[in-house]
Length: 391
View 1 (cartoon, rainbow, N blue to C red):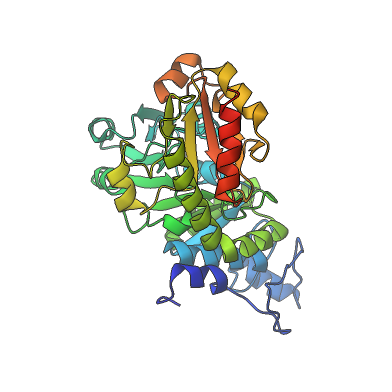
View 2 (cartoon, rainbow, N blue to C red):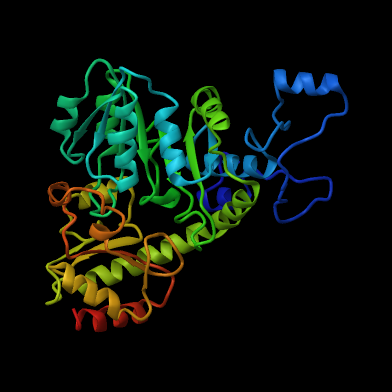
């Protein structure tokens, strides 16, 4: 298995077949497990074996298949599947820090990630320093001898800033800090985050892994000692585990993820190039465009621009006109779906941020985030073009 390519791992890794030899992975839709004797129950609670399970909050065969498969895909030793992407972000951070610890984070984050860092961790006595993630001098100045962890989105939501994983990891590891990367925009298809220095990689499986708008899910990936010794005790006791049915959906999503993501990326590149210079737009932001500030880093770190682009219509009124004129692209707040989705971050996903903070992050009133789906590229371009004509 170690010699398999990513697409093969996404289909076959981690499979556990029952005595029936099923082709599609089985859904073990059970909350608990039985024991032959009281002595067996005692022994399992003392130390469960590799294929022994106690309670679905602790682990489940279907969930274990998903954990093993995506860990193999990512090049991680182990993974813990969570109820949502935010359960994964919260679990990765909260399980390892305590009052008095210091965390350094990039400032450009999804609204809920900011809430965990600004509100939750600080409430429990964790000091958090925010930096411009693209400025290595700021990282170097903020990381201290007592820094416990650094956290960043490898590609920020929604302004698509790209952070140098290797460089930040080198700075963090110099003081023994753990590097936690939210890699959702890069996707497991283009990710080499662990090989590039990340200690822990977090995904919202709700996005490209499921990719079809069906279920919430998340995953924390890293070394086995961290996953089983630090993350698992916290997650299983606080209830953030993934359900068996969601894990089965994610397994099915992984089988087609590579094909979907590459097709979506190709379309995103085509749309970004076609929309560049459009008279109704102030700006087109896409990491695959040569004028993106971190274009060279994108090519070295991912090899492609990803499935999401952003357009700035100049004002909220113009953005709303464009959104309301769309016929194919849906207005929603998810991304990575088979259906193309448009989001107005300033009034939805990042609404709670003060205006000054939105301005500093580049979340302008006219900004629209476009998650590109699997529709025909010509149809999407026609839809966007006619909508921009009404903006």
